[in-house]
Length: 263
Image: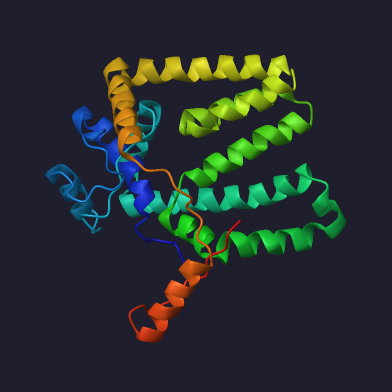
């Protein structure tokens, strides 16, 4: 279903890698606090048109410069749709691995068996609006979620160095998992804490080495601008969203009906 589709959340990664590769560093982080680029710069539009994609369905790059630098040579090889499809394969594999490691991590699924656990997990991941929408958008959060879960699987297996390293990798991709290091501290698992700090510092130095400090300063300014303007609210939809979709279907204003599930 997602093969060769325009994965809007992945546009940020491709665009950043492309402009890093072509030396147009001023186009990686756009000014403003919006989470969607409603009026993309001409260079963005030209890139989307080059690959036959919509010119206004682009998200801004909000990740560390490290990933723009690492993705730069990939954008030289793959077109946008090829990149989206390749990343979707990675996301689906990450979802499958998440199901397996979540089964291994908790006691409850051991009593229901992996088959039932997998069916329930697949139904939630692909059969609900929230799950399928994330896959369709190509959200990098899916991969970050797997890496974070894998870190705590290793933590439960007493493999503290690997746990700290994986959590640091997740934080280097998306800053929000950083608060989970408190679990390591509360459990007094200092090897995990030091591995997290060491790998995190190494990735930060690598990022600055590859991309330079000005891009990092620009990223921090962008994040500060967003935090001053974005209203945080629950993103999961309840019964009211389902009733809205049902009404839209009955009235003929909506072509499809999306079932939302509150996790």
